Length: 186
Image 1 (cartoon, helix red, strand yellow):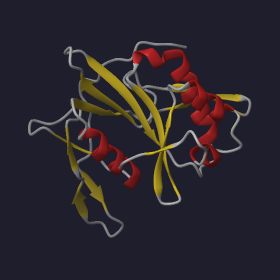
Image 2 (cartoon, rainbow, N blue to C red):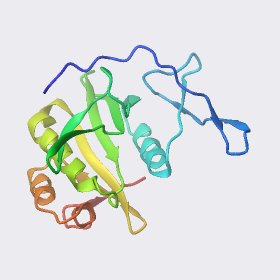
Image 3 (cartoon, rainbow, N blue to C red):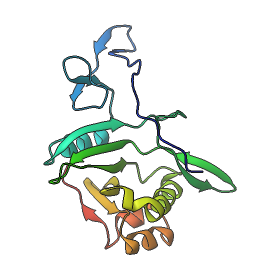
Image 4 (cartoon, rainbow, N blue to C red):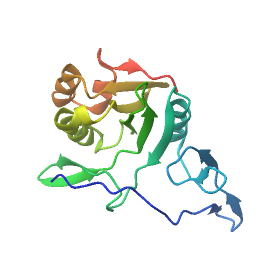
């Protein structure tokens, strides 16, 4: 079901992480998030793949902002339907990046780093692929990224042959290891 995605206005975001021994450490802060603080920074706890993608994407020409898609149901979280056996579930891509084009318009890119080794990897990728087929014209890029054998690999879900390869893949790893996968410079 297509629903209007609300623009986020404010979040309560943690700024500290509590370690196992009880000490607290400041979370790393990143620039250009849609909900930056007064200093232009946004605290977040990202895994190594997410940090690599964020660093690569925020340095691209024309980048004006990024959004950390919420992992929970919310009016300001992009949820994409995928099939998990006989159940409908939602995949929530990690990032939406925004770039200003030469004509001044803004384009959004969905970039989702996700482990190919997880049991839900292929069904989620198929769901994201179907979304790209139906809604790809609304985005500049829709890409799935994973680390395979020490190298980041990218699948461009706006390409019909990539979507077909994903729909017939035996596993997410085989899709990322296939001929349509490209290196991702992270």
